[in-house]
Length: 159
Image 1 (cartoon, rainbow, N blue to C red):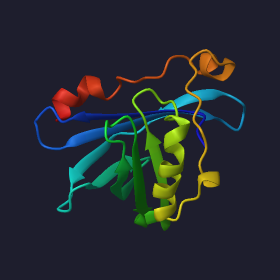
Image 2 (image 1 turned 90 degrees about the vertical axis):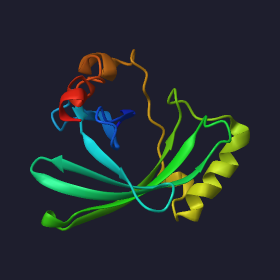
Image 3 (image 1 turned 30 degrees about the vertical axis):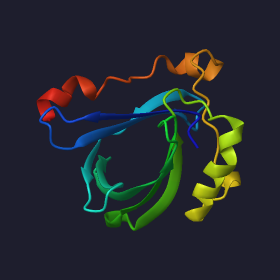
Image 4 (image 1 turned 120 degrees about the vertical axis):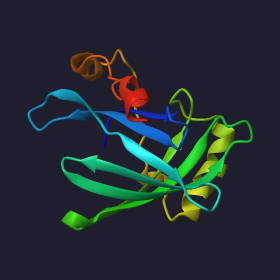
């Protein structure tokens, strides 16, 4: 679990595809709080709402298949499901994300619909955890500000 997370999506500078940069706070074994980041290339698949994500993470390439499971009519939230593998090290994983523009949970009147969407992917609400993006929490202050524009600065160069 990562106590603070930012899911950043933005178009490629060359107009072909998008980038996904998760920036997340990690509590290390020795008690420090540090920010980690990844830089995924995202390609659309043939079926609308499906995507292929790839990332090089500490010398190991991960390949992930993402699906948009559902969203609010006004796009105030979206539910993603992903299944991935780092085949070189024999690792497989899957999960889901509920994303909102501000990181807050949607209105309580919408939660049952959202939980049903997760259940359709065999993810139970109790398996999820709420991310705390409070920049003023003691742990977040210890980590310093998140490097939200780390990759975006070079996106125009790497396209």
